[in-house]
Image (cartoon, rainbow, N blue to C red):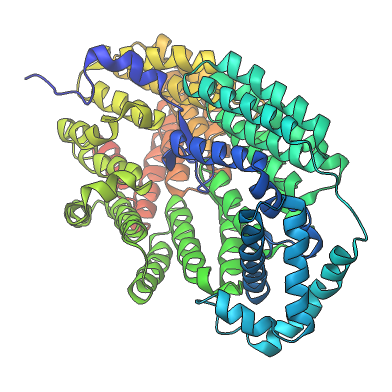
Length: 638
């Protein structure tokens, strides 16, 4: 019977080439959680143009206006909700007067001064509240006249407006011709980049940055370098140059002691380092980032950094460390004063903690947090897209639990949820990828490999959105379905691309998949070679513990088969060490299984059989069905 593949053979080359054209969301480092690069690329190009746009430059990039609002205006103060809302209102009023002046042909600098004079007059004559009500129809009702006056004093707005009007300082305006030249160069760079002419695009970005530094102070050129570095880091072909721009931005941020932009540089550098599999560097950047936010007492940014760190450790199967950061994220979400976002933060932190507990095989505790998540979405109105993502996530996690317990009937019912969701919403959902992989696991565990492959098919319909984890999983399913040749073909093409991109993490996963495929072919020496290569890549890094555990377990079993007990003992000890670091009960029991096999093969039959019985009892008590079934199968052989 012929097998229908998700992608036709002729398409594989293009498909492999588009592996990493994706942008990590705040679900840090998880290759299953992707918004794809085109979306963010356009956002970054818009921000680049905004820096160079005259009016946006004055209003949003803080020329005179920064002298009016002395507290940070953007998301970094968002947890001080009333203060943040007042700042936004003040900016909106300022914009209205500014744009009216600009419409009359007044230059940007003078338009800001005139706007400041008008607002100062309203404050001095006690008409600020009245003006606000007229200009802003949907103002936050908590901002009363009394509160307005308190915030005007707290933010020192009146005194700063006086300084503007009295002309206590002047800002030299960059020449219009210089900005026109830079704009033209950036437009050329963006056009070249969109056409994949990366070398020429980078040259133009470099030229634009150099000219911008000639006419501007450090902050604007710093932001420019940061944005260019970010967009270049989205693509394998330009990631090294992206890191170069990001490090330039970070160096400037340090020199002018701009903590906010320094933290942003750390965030982008951490994503770029993760993509290359440089996990130790990634952790360093994340640690510096959260330290900056903590010292700045920026509670919102600290909370989002805690979430990133929990995902970082979780995606390396380091569940004990992930649990620590996940708990911090959970506690921060409860304490946050940002009432508009509180429900989302609370929901996401509970869902995140449930995911970590699933990694630790703590089913009942995970269910508790899933129930809290479910109750939250019942009581808070969310957008359809977001609501569907949450439903998919909750059903996926519950499905995972039921598969692990061996309750396949319950799992099947949970996966039916996608029949009730609009297909357009599904494909926009970053949760859909993981959902289908878990559903495919449901069929895999029952030996229905054709159905598992068919379940993955929607993930391969758009080549620029393809996830490398899905490719490795597809190869495994093909190998299990006796299509080992096709599996090897896919993996070796992947290997070529990942080698060119120097993606350490991607290579390690591909090596692991190759080891497994050759193991199924019973080519044990070739299998061992690839398992060794996967371990070798991670030896100087923070290992993905799932890779380290799997590789050592398989090498241990192969060594036992060859009666090479000295090597087997070394692999077993390594697997157990990594399993303990992970905290995954299933992984720990897996290492106990190989230890029992080792005992039996080295003549300690009674001790080995007793160990198997203990493992079976513990697996049954912990409701880890697949470990229980494996152990029972081995016990039945005696």
